[in-house]
Structure formats: structure tokens, C-alpha cells
Image (cartoon, rainbow, N blue to C red; front, side, top):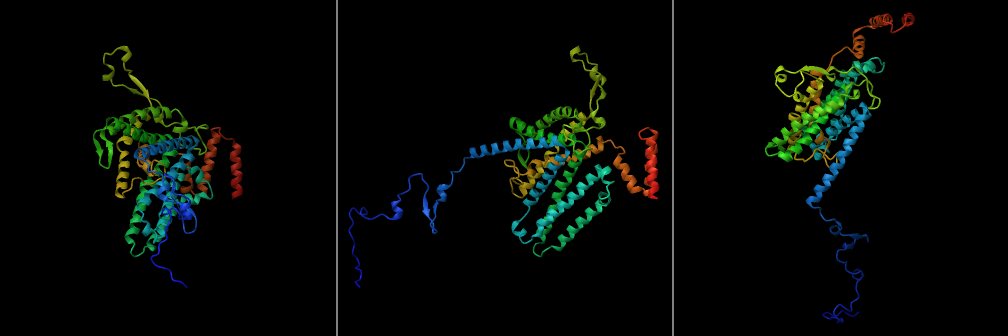
Length: 461
């Protein structure tokens, strides 16, 4: 076999002109602007990632897209809120429940360390267990308090109601014991940090949300109006800050200004007066809940709290004694509902104190170096970012209402509770007999009711 000769070159006409192009070359070079393609080892034709990527958006385009998304979701949230508000108390309760669950999830997530959590599979489960236990206790307290007349006469619910606090405590103890048993060497600091963080989140979110739930049961005005005042204050703090802001208010929120803070307070006080005037005209808002199936169309019926009724206030003589034209003469007596004065205090709290809930949340986010608590609401961040001021406002509303506005009267549920827990069966029977005789004497019931009751008691003996 002949050996190949070294150093022999073959001449081609026109350089490469006579050479047959390869398959890849015969397809031609890619046209300018077209994506570069290449053949992978498995024979598939793919496009270069660099060419396929869209050009990066400018800063203006990003802000524009964020603004559009934020605006759309703002209107979506407002619409959903008012639909729930007008549909009935049970839907509002559903929204508050969803908010506190998502907020708890977001707050727990920012302190979580995924690499450690993988080695401790029960950490996340314990977080949710403590949440469920806390909600069982708090919701049970509200239901028993506001619906005694239903819960305490039901054969199944009665033992759960009378032993509710003990059951809740034992559920918590089970979680506590499980936590101690799950402690793992090398992870003590992380586990105790998560335990403490979980309890802080339960207090700051779920315990405060419990008072918001009670506000709903006392009347929708005590839920809607405080929440609206916080929103009004937030809006006008931004507007007044942009228009007049010069002096920084607090370093935690560099964009907050003293001028915006004070201007929002004035606007919130004015808004509180207008909203109160509008809401007290409808009993659906001012009546405590006695029917969870009620809505804006069916309405509610009750004897209004005295703060919703007109009261006469006499103007000080020093104000009415000034010599003024008849058109500017001040009346000696002014008729106004006391709730208007109470709501000025609510507006002041929403303007001067509630924003510090937002500052607290800002400090928390700076601690963990995150911009938002989550991405639950497109364009807005997390639910917690929108609710940071609402929780403390709801708690203040409940405390203020119970201290200065609530009228404490003996309720049907209270009487039943006293009879069930304080009397034996014979004592309860005597109460029923006594009430029956009283109602017959008042002409509310006929004497046949007493006869029927006596026959039933004889059969029991």
C-alpha cells in the first residue's frame, strides 16, 4: 500500500471557490438580526439564548408597568372588599381570616433559613400547628361570647363551649411537648429562634386580628370606619408629602415627612366626619350582628346605641354673645350625634399612632434586608405590607369601644349562660316555670303553655 506523500498541496481555482461547501455552510450565514441557530448533539435545532432574549426594559418602562399593575390590583381589591362588605358579615369574616393566615405565612417566611429547615422537617409543621391552635382558641372565644344563645343550648356544642379554654390549652401543650421532643443537637439556636418568632407573629397578627373580628360582631361600622380612616390617612400622607413635604419625619421611612404627617391628620379628621355622617344612616352598619345571613339588602334591626342618636349640645355663652350679623349668628343649641366626636379621636389615632405600625414593619424588613414581606398582591408586595397599620388600629378600636361606647345589658345569651353554669336541673326548671307565669301574666303567652309544660314535667318524673 502506497504511503501518503507529505508536503503535497493541491491547487484550487480561486482559492476556496472550487471547494464544495459543507452542509452547514450551504444553508447560508444567518441574516443580520436573525437568531443564531445551532445543532445540538441530539440533532435538535435550537436558538441561541443570547439572541432569543428580549432587550432589557428601561427604568421608565419598569416604573410604568409597576404603576399599571399596582393600579389594576388596587381597584380589584377595592371591588372585592365592597362586594364582601355588602354581602354580609360572614364574607367579611372570611376576608379577615384569609388576611391573617397569609400575613402569618409571610412574616414566618422572612425569618426562615431553607438550608436549616430541610434538616428539620417538623419546624414548618409546628408553625402551622400553633397557628391552628391559636385560631381555634380565639375564634371559639368570639363565637361563645356573641352566640351563647345558640351554642349553650346545643347538646353537641355545649361541652365544647364549657371546656373550650381547657381544650385550647391542652392543644397548645401538645405542640409545646412536640417542639421540645424535636430539638436537635446543632440546631438549638435556630429552633428556639423559630419558636420565639412564631409566637411573636401570632401575637402581632392573629391576636390583634381577633379584636378586628369582635369589631365586626359589634357592628360593621366598627370594622369599616377605622380601616377606611387608615387608608384615607395613607393616601393624604402621600399627597401632602409630595405637595408640601420638606422635613423628614423618621429615618426608618425616609420618604415620610412632617408636613405630610400633619396634613394627613387634618384630612383624616375631615374625612371621619363625612364618613360617619353617611354610615350612621343605615342600621346594617350600626347594629350588632344577630343574623350572619344578613346583607345590605335585608339589613339588620336593633335598638341603636345612644352614640348614634342626636343629642342637644348647648353652645358656650361666650361664643353666642358676640355681636354678629344675623346670617352669621351662632345657634345656642346644636344637635349632633356623639359618634362624631368619638370618630375624631379615631381619626387622630389613625393619623398619629397607627402609622408607627408601618414604621415597625419597615424596621422589620430592614432587619432581614427584604423590600416586601411577600408577593401576594402584584404591584403591592405582600398582604402584610398593606395591613401593617390596620392590626393596631383594629385593636385600638375594640379597646376604645369596650371602654367608652359599649352599653352593657343582660343578654339572652348571658341569662342562658348563668342558668346552664350556675343552676342544676331542678333550678333551671323553676326558672322556666317562673318565666312562663310572667309571660302569661303579661299576655304574651296563653295559659295552655303552662299546662303543657306541667304535663311534660310530670312525664319526666
